[in-house]
Amino acid sequence: MRKHIIPMALFAVLATMAVSCQKENVMDFVPETTASEVGTVYTMQYAVDGVLHSITISNDSEWDAFMLTIFALSREGSKINLMDENRPANGFLTKETQVYTSTNESNASTWTQEKVLGGYRVTVVYNQTTREYTCIATR
Amino acid sequence: MKRSWRITILVCLLLLAGGGTVLLLPQVVPFDQCSNVYKRYADMDGIDATFIKDYKVNDTIAVSATLLEAKADSAWTVILSDFNVPVIPEEYRELVASSNSVDFWLASKDNPKDCTDTIISHNNLIVMSRQMQAICICHIKNKHQAIAIMNKETHDLKNPKNN
Image (cartoon, rainbow over all chains, first blue to last red; front, top):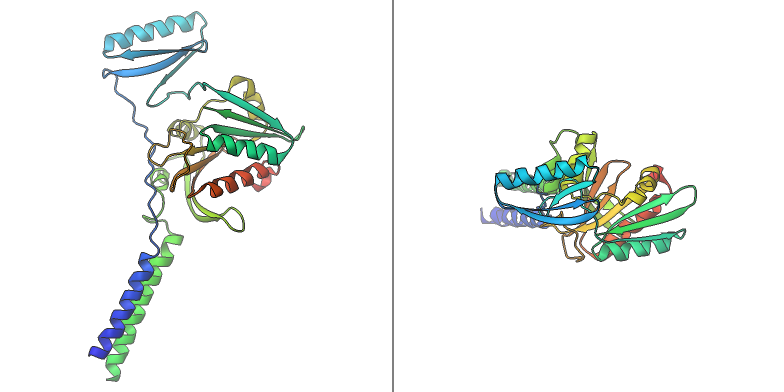
């Protein structure tokens, strides 16, 4: 009996080791999509014709007054962008933009990598007609 | 005596088969080892979610990635909002809309809406195609993987059929 238990135990250990070596870290990224409730203290940024403003709203009446102001500005022809520090509602206005253009793929790629590793979001555009790369870095 | 050995061999084979199943099956069917991004979007209407294990970027580098493809404009809007994708500056919108483009940025695992400038283990490199309405979360482990991916995707812009 002992002669059979030892090989069985050995195979059990090998199988366990084989399984444990396959362990991967679980990516636990879950993007948040819940919105803040109206009525709680809510900090927003908004832009009127490209000029950034910030406002703190702590009750419904302040929210109503703010929205009436926004509607009035919009009726007058102003361009309004609404966003908040937690979850931008419609994309965010970029505060800094850098652009690099080149027909050299290596130079465009190197510039892009430097910006991405520096915390920028980079859009790389390739124009088939002019064979030119345009790299737009924003943050 | 012979019967005991048969039982022993049978048990050992069962253990080996069980270990092999646990090893191989996750590569075919994404269980808990796949990303939470995949699990979140797998059942969402209008979005095709795919977990790609060990995608070969080049001969020496392979990364795992989660690919999200929007099949409807409404689903694409959800993705853009979830990942906090910025609007293109107005003066470049026509260029981006009329040409092949790809977006890159680093996102921290804990707060993916924010750009990060730190390459640490298990951060993500986000690669997005506006034309294809697809976003790929590359689960990179170092700077070299990020650079290899950006080089490849930048090169592939010249040949859109290869994307």
